[in-house]
Image 1 (spheres, rainbow, N blue to C red):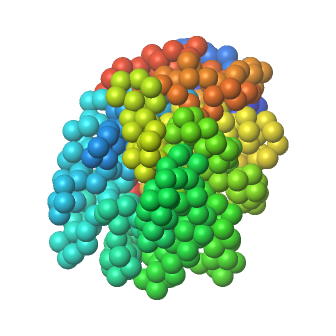
Image 2: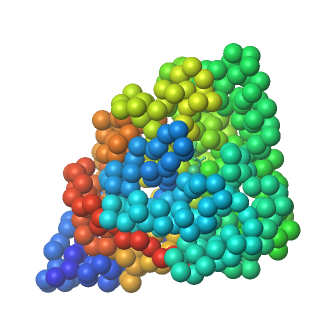
Image 3: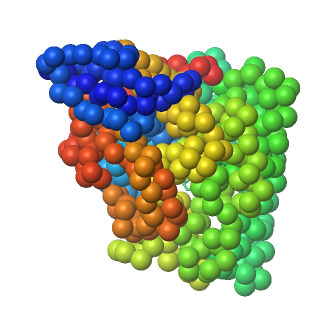
Amino acid sequence: MGLLIKNGMIATDSAVFPGDILIEGEKIAAVGVDLSAPDAQVIDAAGKYVLPGAVDVHTHMDLDVGFARAIDDFYDGTVAAACGGTTTIVDHMAFGPKDCSLWHQVREYHRLADGNAVVDYGFHGVFQHVNEVTLEEMKEIAQKEGITSFKVYMTYDYMLQDDELFRVLRAAKEAGIVIAVHCENHGVIQQLRKEYVEAGCTQAKYHPLSRPARCEAEAVNRMIHLAAMAGDAPLYIVHLSSKEGLHEVLKARAEHQKNLGVETCTQYLTLTDEMYEDPQEGLKAIMSPPLRKDADREELWQALADGQLDVVGTDHCPFHYKKGKAEKQYGAENFTKCPNGAPGVQERLMVMFSEGFMKGRLTLPQVVKYCCTNPCRLYGLYPQKGTLQPGADADIVLIDPNITHTFTAADIRGASDYTCYEGMSLTGDIDRVFLRGREIVKDHTFLGKRGDGRYLHRGKSILA
Ligand code: URP
Ligand code: ZN
């Protein structure tokens, strides 16, 4: 019978125009003006913006960090995503047991997500050791599972050394796979954390001081050069947080570095290290990299406005603050014991719409580009996802720009008991959300059901 969304302001990554969208089955059948379909159910979108369902390519659902586990599993976390207008996620896997095959975590993540996720989902693979076997497994997994991106870390226990990073990049280049990288200089961070703790400086405010912006900049710079030396390997820098890191990216752009994608996250655009001043409240924002200063935020916004960055993600990875095991409180006496990560998957599109578009920092097509379309282009999902064109999945979000709302923890639809955006006034309300033509959110209520999300076998990135 079909569905006809009429009279909305359609927003794509290149334009905003009044029009209608006809959906047949799971797909968009037509986009145009004055469309008619006598048998279709009509949805009046007058006064609303109509965007592609948003795509978050940096989440950590159910992340097991050994001493704690992220409290949003694939059900709760994707309900939160849906209620925030995000209809697709690509999740970053946790590390598996020492020396495990790369297949181990692929199987584990299917076990966690299949039958639970309520939005469509894919996975990024992860390297924790490098040898001929794991390099071969990367290629196999890309072919058989459509996992066409793998993550490497330059810090944490399973960080890779430069020779290993170089080998991964070379193999990825050969196979057309994207390498996503967490850039922070491990040695400096380890030394500073040790010194702060030995000096009794254990409050949350020492978290950012132990991970200075230059740690990010050094690692970004190193990785960019390693990728170039690996034959312009496809490289994607996750969660860029600082102006120092950004300057390395801008330098690489000016020197025409090939196949480079760069992501920042909502929190680095809108929050600052002032959040760490209160030793208790500060625990909520312990994440890596840490929140930075106003000047960093401003330069990141400018870089988005100038088209120098590619994606806005979230790094969604919540732990309870007070509820249940209150894992964030492990850091109450010593910030190094606090599990890293914070919620954000529900907030991202609303915050970007409000702080980006409504405040005039970005155009609406830019918001669509960074939150919906580019994530798909860079991670092999385009044009199935992230776009409003005939043939694409009918993943659609309606936003009402006439509603202003103060966001609080009570609005969270996942398992998190807090939001980093507490008290933020947000203009633009997520009005209705459709996943492959079915309505999954209306009036802030989730209407879908467990397991409705479909696994996405991804294709090649535009970087590869
Ligand atoms: O603090 C963060 N970002 N936690 C999630 C794991 C990671 O580092 O990506
Ligand atoms: Zn992450």
